[in-house]
Length: 611
Image 1 (cartoon, rainbow, N blue to C red):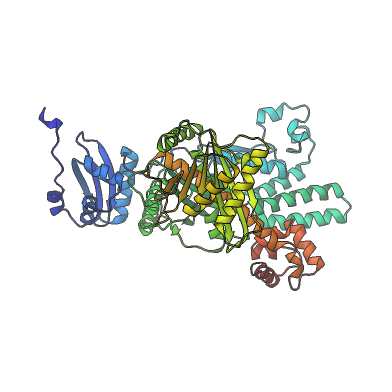
Image 2 (cartoon, rainbow, N blue to C red):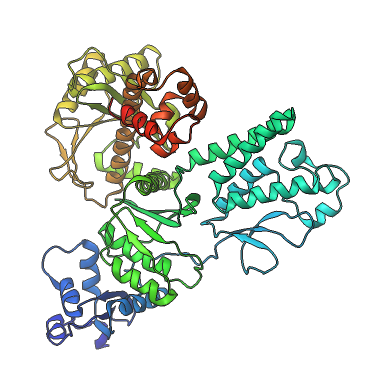
């Protein structure tokens, strides 16, 4: 059959008469299968970019090589093109588009109203009019975590009605102080009603008002010598303050969705934080299948379009935060407003509390991606690839990597991370406080850390690693080799130096000697493993350095703050738990301490962050 050999796509002829209006383009292969769907403000300019001779990624080149025909659909606006693009992607799921697999309905917390003693439950599906619903939450785990927290604080029942009606004596939840046993009459209706009101206030994000109300109740109970009641209220108060600290709440309000994308050689993770009424009610990680989009901003743009233009979403925030700029932010905002008659602002450059949320989302995305990379089967495959790349006699069962961290020579710290056949073995990680060297001398720091590590392993007659990696260039590698020669040990040595652009995938690898350079393609599983180990070593070194530097700097710094005497110092420590926690607090959080005005809180914050 002659059509088994397809004619190449004549892009020049196609582009010659292509319109410059906005619209959607669809790329098909010889079998008529849809390869890719894209939108454009200017169809001619956008489609022409695929046929440039330079600047294309490997995935884009592969896509172009398979194109047999391109179809277009002109739209009235870029917003209309965005909506059509989303519909086509969801319907056909083209292999070269970024794909979000997420068709589950979102869970809620349900507070029953029909029963005389209402209960609190996880709910997914249609919401009825007879009950109260709080949410949605980003995942069932977020709902379960909230249920556990509410059990500890207010002890609202969570048993099914059939169980409730047939109880003869209190269950285990009562024994461990997770329920007040209304099933057998151990709590009055008035007290239970008050606990329900507190639960509603908490779920509605009114934590600060709730704290003030409980403080007043506690004082009244203590004044009446009702110490058992005062102690219970004190426990509720401590719980609420702890939740506030964990959720970075500092008097903020509003509904915000926070997204952070982290892309590494092995994959992409987008982490989502759901903020409602200024309180984080849950989080979720997505691992979208990468398409031809290589830029973080394009990945996030494609993800957000699919996420928010899906029909199952019934909850929209006032603003969306992204850790990377969204090129099509205005188009997406317009599409949301057109389809759902609601204005949602998309932001990237933010400050204060929103910046903290973004930082938290980035941290979670990084951790989740590393955890995914550490899966046992992947680690084994990468170890085998590393064995082949370095031509080792056996697959390395234990790898150790060293890195150095300091701030202009201050508080120099070295890290040693250990990877085995199960991935990172964090129980074997070690940190070394480096002293007795010239400040900023990374070579001497590396020599000291490696000497201390392997001299001790020799003394303890412990098995040495199968491969040693040092994060640094020729100098660090030569120093490591010199120390090993001095100790009389022979371990294969790999040096990882950052390339000129300092981007992942551009590293220079030296094996055994600085003259032996190893070149690995950026898609190599062996390179992914080396990058993972190097990044983990770098993270652990920075963590150790910051802890050491903070310990030396903070100490009893509260003693030196102007206008803060013994009474206020005690109040600060009682509220936050430690001087380090005070330094980590915001101005709004410090101002919540009894006896500390807003102006004084600002002075305390400025002092702690200027020393």
